[in-house]
Image 1 (cartoon, protein in one colour):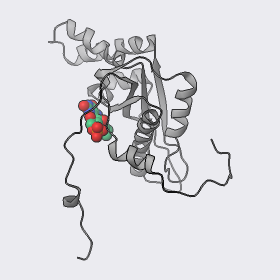
Image 2 (image 1 turned 90 degrees about the vertical axis):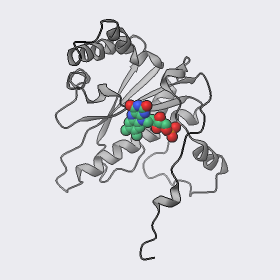
Image 3 (image 1 turned 30 degrees about the horizontal axis):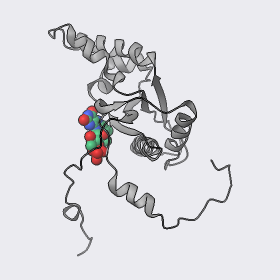
Image 4 (image 1 turned 120 degrees about the vertical axis):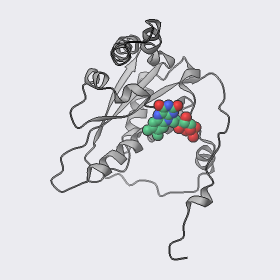
Length: 203
Ligand SMILES: Cc1cc2nc3c(=O)[nH]c(=O)nc-3n(C[C@H](O)[C@H](O)[C@H](O)COP(=O)(O)O)c2cc1C
């Protein structure tokens, strides 16, 4: 990775990146298996993920990494939160909920962590930057040959789960990024008609 004040390469045409972006799709967490990335790869993904536009360099986000048995341990918090919110549900649903993080060998929680900024970077911009982190993390994992999916599901919004994650009052879950080896290829999904989303101002 570059060091501070290194001269960075100018953008050049890179068809491989263009093709990668044109074909980009998420890989379903439920169809993800071993192997997951190793420690050095995870470090690289997080370094790339943190390399996003960030107004006033506040780094208004952070990561929580779940691997191995931590996925089951944290699953107990998810299961307990689910049963607390849905006491009428059968007990075996708690087993299902507790195994959510087991769908992939690696799950990374991206936490939006807005900073009080005396010079006034709006919170909205800090939250947008956190979304960019999620997407960069997916791209970094996929560029290294892994599958990735950005999920929130219900537990990103549950107060008990947020407490177990150690979120402060101002923090929110931007996403849980599931990363692993895809067990099958994704099919193209319906895409919006981009032309219908474009206006040429003044025309
Ligand atoms: C903030 C955010 C949260 C998401 N949460 C979920 C989710 O909980 N469940 C889900 O099926 N897809 C969720 N998605 C969508 C997937 O990440 C993915 O984009 C979609 O399944 C397929 O579209 P793609 O292949 O073009 O990425 C979420 C996307 C975003 C941006």
